[in-house]
Image (cartoon, rainbow, N blue to C red):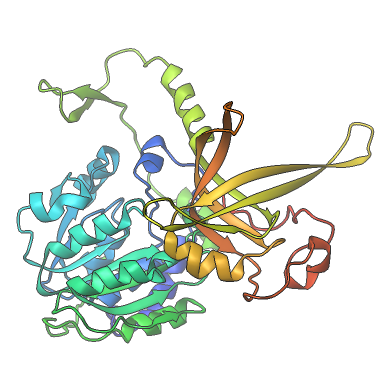
Length: 450
């Protein structure tokens, strides 16, 4: 069997086919939102391991291991795994899937201080939470041995953040920046554009590698295989699989999207055991035990639903006006403020068509995104997809009256129709050739992020 480094495009395509057997991730738990967790598509997991050059015998760390989708590829390439996951539900899953791996449940931002063996890893691979991204990247990088490599999935906005790249290159060498195809994570719960960052633990100060965008999976596989050789990489070794690990021809034909029902029909039934979380005597981490108590009060589920509705929002609409780029008092850091309108068309009870327009005040505190992305490209009428959280905005007016409003604090933004800086703003009715529908609103048949 060819290893990942021998046939990267073919293996990535195969894993994409396997991933298509699963369901689209349209609902997220409270833990997933609180910890900013998105599972890695199998084909992208292969690209992360490929760029990390994980080879037999390499000590490999995954500081935010999630459900093990990157780890399973690294294990197939012969890596000696150390998996860390702070979320208890996912950590229990890793305990069952990777019994031979070293496992821990630490804060991924502090693995360099708390994890035994930190400072001795050959490779670190991860899809870290995008919240507090730099701290997660720094923690993983600091756990590497000299000459080690970090390969991480990051938002595309991080790859173009000059300040972040400058700080990372002071620690080591940014040897690759690869942009994934648009909507690479769409089946895994988000439309945020993403890419791959590769950072070697070598003497810093070298120039940051140029950003290269892959138009499709095959192009990304070629870019990941072209990443420079890791300084202390082990020799490539061909791995052979035993015959018992290969699917018979009939099973192979069933293991495709068209044969999904037949594949499931022939599978053994799955048995479930109800478990309840029992607090430990110390009151710290909880353990799992067979449930004997009555079902818990459903009231917490209602509270969770309200929290998800109020705090997390993905919005698609149009800019009502050109964004305002403001400077914060004291620090002088720039931020972008703008308003997005969303128009929904519907039919009234009497059969007549109607439409409803809602406006959202938005603010982006990321200086690099505001200066390098929003300011040069975003204009009145631009169609945008935004992800962020809702918070209360309070201020006192000139009349001394305190005012309240809700605003969306932007964590990620994608422009669907960029405009070059200096182009005059146009009304939405005049920009149909740029992807904006004349007359306002958007096509409800379009792909929506969630």
